[in-house]
Length: 481
Image 1 (spheres, rainbow, N blue to C red):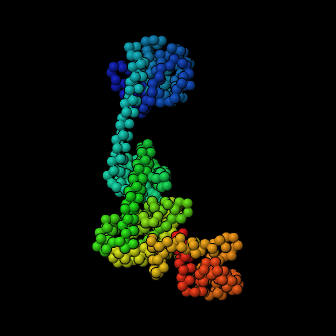
Image 2: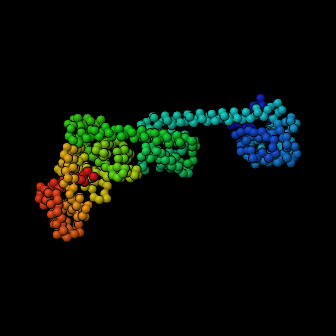
Image 3: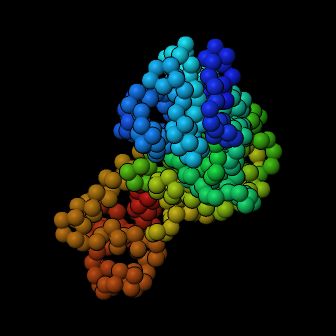
């Protein structure tokens, strides 16, 4: 506890006597004590101090009143006057001025040194600081214990609840607009506002600690921010590890390396429930930060859904009871908030673990055939070509580049638009008039370009077998983008 005029009077060894002062003025905390014989000590005072003097230079009534006025202006808590030196008792004019300013005055006997008084004030302040630090350390330990009592978001719930109790505030943690712990929807007339404190969870992930006002124990917020960041970074590492392990299971499943019974067991080991119908969502990153999709947190509504890393894509195993479109939109919203460009493909729902492969290839195919500007692809009928193009053993992408390479060079060097013409010709099933309308050119130009395509590639798009080769080459490029 801080020293006060009252606590000083309670020390019999000091022998102090109260000359004037009463009420709350006697209980004001004393931050520090200093002795001075300067008539105007204000340049040396910072406030909340006890001033000790023998009145060596304050011998006149005018000087005594000026001295009291100066220390009152400097925010002093009280005046301790040493008698037996210049004055045998505390001067009446000084007492009168102090009473008018509600400044307590103590009489310090000749036998009590000023050093004894200042040491008592200093020791009391040090004791209080130690008690404060001890309390803070205990509170920090409480915060840490509340976090390690749970795992991931459950640990955050304990942390926010404990921080709310220690600060007397409402507390919440959010990430990319989704509240992970606590609540921002509070009905409390006492709330005057919210402080929004950024938290660096990982080098690429930001979260936010929200704390309402008014509150106490502000110095706990820095510790809380560190603990939130630690909790979320640990969660991110755990999620990456579990997705990598799950990816091995899903990869084996996709490529038919698991029998039905083993597939069910291994899916259960990665947290996917047995029974019911399941569909696959494939999340593919784009742009400079495409790789960050692998660590993208799923929205809270999908926190119990298994995720896996397969071929540098995030694969989500979604129970059929969950709305695929809403789930894809929620994933897209998290990605946008994180600044990561993604595309989401949705496969159909199938019963049985081995049938998940069809949903996976449908989701991939829906991404490959996304319209320009679209972010979410709905599943379509799975084509045989999609399965061929998904084969790891066939060098379809290399063959596609070999077949289409001459057309790329012609387009690049001469602006011939042969690749665009070939794509439109195959999509329009060889209807030259429709191709011309789509490309905004003459039908004879389309026919001429088809001749060029046949001459440059050795495959004639008007011949069915050749058209299949050319179509697969274009499809391989779409899937491999």
